[in-house]
Length: 352
Image (cartoon, rainbow, N blue to C red):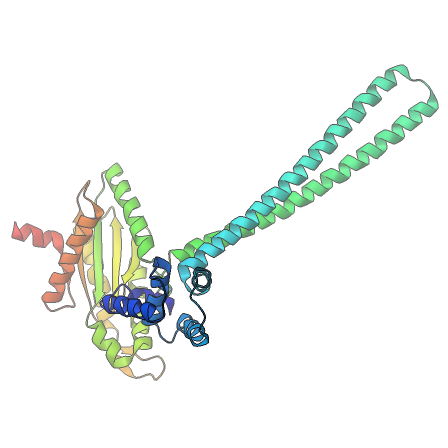
């Protein structure tokens, strides 16, 4: 899956994949542009994926890897490019709708101006005319003009109604695109980008309001061994299970995200380290208490545990520094035997 490939490219194998991608590009006389490097890294990371199959087909046919070909491959197979394409399409459609509405309004304005001139002329003529035939002709002219402007206004109303519906549809589509761009496909938690954006916003709010904020990092213990034993699909099942527990405890105003691979991160706005430690213990207890079964065969998988670390951000402190302290607390949990929560504030006070 695309989400797993992205995680692989950010994991321990990323350097090996990068070297193999460069070697493969050189073998096939492909220039190592940023776009080509991204394509071929995905090709190496997921050799059985749709992108790899299409690249293999092009290579077998001896097709030159031109810039146009690379852009078409990216638009078809890379999530980021697909997202940009969707945004462009929605923007183009919105521009067309606005242009059509603008044209309809302009036509209606001209029609109303002409109608106004007709009324003005009729008003002047009424002052000087008493002839019955002339009055009859004038009434007929006004009737025709009135019918014309009414029809034009009805057309405008219809167009405005249609455009309102279409703009609402486009707005919903763009909102869905935004949600897709900030959601991890495997767990339905926020993704790393969404976490970074939310962290910046939460830090600004905490500084402005003078409130505490605590960050936490959680990691599934011995996940690589579990994955190697039971396979990636079962590994995904475990990640989804842990994510469901974290997501339930980390509901708004808290914020939970899949940070990378089997690692998760949480933001606790307005909560100090003691409260957060209790919340993380709740997550740890629930995860460890579940006896897991393999969905496809109903085999017992045993139990899974997680380790966690937390750090309370100081007012004005850079978010990266607070995350580093939470990471350090996580590694203390790992070194101390796993399946535990480490309060980085307590460790710091003891060290002091």
